[in-house]
Length: 460
Image (cartoon, rainbow, N blue to C red):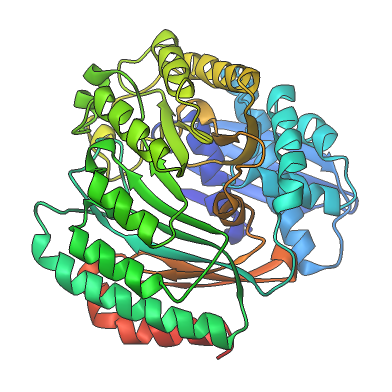
């Protein structure tokens, strides 16, 4: 249990604890503003730690709260780093969006790269990575409150990967839900199209994700694409994901409806690992899918995962080299996240962080050498080595939806179970959200309410 005299800090401090402990210990925290400095006192496992920071807290309550969070987490990180004798690549940062923090620091008048290293204890390599990502992103960041993306979620997959904790359904066990779900989703897309038009939103990207949308029968895919026909955006992505779900018929259908980007994700090139993690395809399936997708002229994003069970840094290097040989426009390198609800979490598999550090460094150096640039990043809880997921792109092929989604500078109109709509105000300084139910049955029963909630979110 975590107790603090500032209750809003309890979750934040818990995130720092989980960087060092597999099982969260009891922690008591007391923070105090001593007129020019902030002091944190922690009682943990029979020890007391005290840290102070020269910090005059401003009168603005939002800024004050943000700084208290930042420095309380830093105090605990410093104490635990000293206790365990190890530093982490992102220091005291625990948030999902480190590149957004970089921009926030710049807006506060700080020198972000210096501040990250000297104050928040981020490694020089990761601070430099965030600086580079911000430079690459700058021309693509949305401007104006009318900029928006449309997300369409399909929560069905052909089986479940052992690392997956997403709310998704094995289509082989829930086939009876496919038809009613597709009908409801098409109705919600129609309502979203009305919302976009009435609110005067300008779409930057359409993204059909999941789950694995390509796991649906062709008839349902066609109906969803037909529902989207009246909407247009420069970027239209369909997340096929699993290579074995990609057929000539699917590619022809996507091309007919104007899709111009696809995800084709092997996760690894090693068939032994694919079998361990429950992927029902081989690397040969990926090779065949890439040949067909690229022949049709789609831009491609490919995902790889660092730290999969049994894989060494050498294994991962082979994956990066063999995938890069296909020249996909985007390569996203994920640090394995072992989350509640996944098979890997149940089996309590663990990854050696040192090896994952090597994997991350290799991916960055090798992909740069192949002409790719890091262009977006995000972090998840319980990741191997406390590392990031990083997207790399050949110049001019950056995925706008990925940037918008992670940097939160554009609104999102989202449809489908577990889809979260966001309305962005003042360049992202304020964000309001409306979430569709996670469970498919609840989504079907609450659809009318959620359509109305989205309209209210956008002032209609």
